[in-house]
Length: 273
Ligand SMILES: Nc1ncnc2c1ncn2[C@@H]1O[C@H](COP(=O)(O)OP(=O)(O)OP(=O)(O)O)[C@@H](O)[C@H]1O
Ligand SMILES: Cc1ncc(CO)c(N)n1
Image 1 (cartoon, protein in one colour):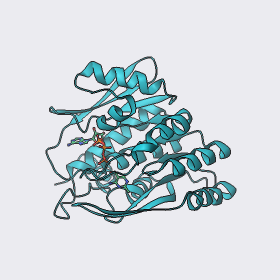
Image 2: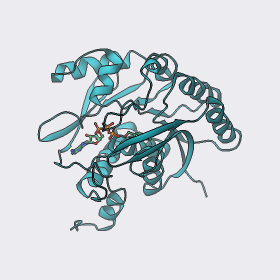
Image 3: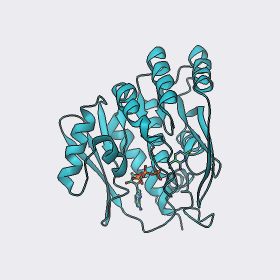
Image 4: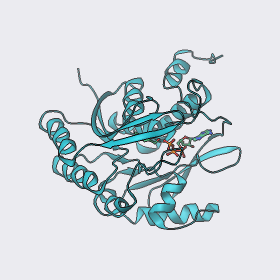
């Protein structure tokens, strides 16, 4: 059997909706064998992040060496990397093992405002990791941090995509979750043209881990050999179903529903009600 394998390099979310848990659930749902290298443990629930315990850079490098020595991931994603030192060791191992199908979710701040990347690590992210990326998936505040721009109009978003593309990634997906309006639009830029991926915006507080889940679905698609536009289409459908059928657990920003896409696909012609 030729199993497709994907690796996530990210933090643990004890509530299970974001981070490494969201990534592994998404890989599994899309039929991809999931592997993980942990960067930090967070004490976190739907109300916020209570504490962050980063691993040492040695611990991160050691996990990546174990994977590199034995298992070849078909695609890799990064999530919460926390510090400049963890970014440096991550970039070093990605280059050393030649993991070229790399999706970077430049996680910076949790929904409640807790920092998941030290501010002084942003320039290391840009210098060491962005040039290795096949795809980077910033949300609008992350794109503002990367470019120093204020993104108010549609043309600002396109200009930020051009500037982030110039930092090295082959493709940029500007996610539209933080914008407003009836449509949640993600904009893919390949250095020449923009392609929009639209879905109806759902009015809900249950959006914990949407970015992690979405970038994990893109990674699963790339690992499976899909073309980028197909992988993004699958990811958009996956996150749309996950948000539309969110689980309603916890008192705050609850997780999305990682089973929904599979259940929808299984019920051809049916609906989730
Ligand atoms: N309310 C919503 N309705 C429909 N789609 C949404 C909604 N919110 C986010 N999305 C979609 O979810 C995906 C993730 O986008 P978003 O901008 O929320 O990421 P994020 O801020 O990085 O998420 P997080 O930090 O919670 O992990 C995108 O495809 C976006 O369009
Ligand atoms: C561990 C972790 N990674 C990423 C996010 C962003 O959603 C989060 N809340 N927690």
